Image 1: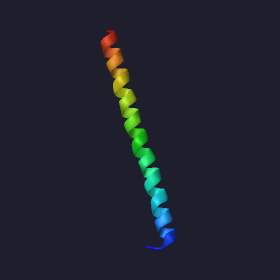
Image 2: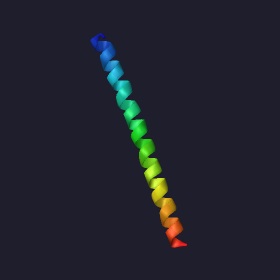
Image 3: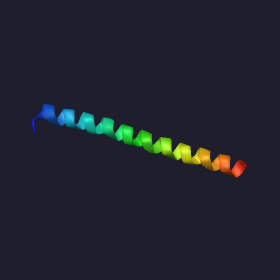
Amino acid sequence: MTPEEETEFRKRQRSRNWVVGGVLLFFAVLFYAITIVRIGE
């Protein structure tokens, strides 16, 4: 793998990690909000 390919690979990997982290954060907040609403009733 050339240095240019490796740099591109790491860039794609980093952006994919950010997306996965964002989705996990979204679901954590969603479950928290659902829990708060259900307890409040």
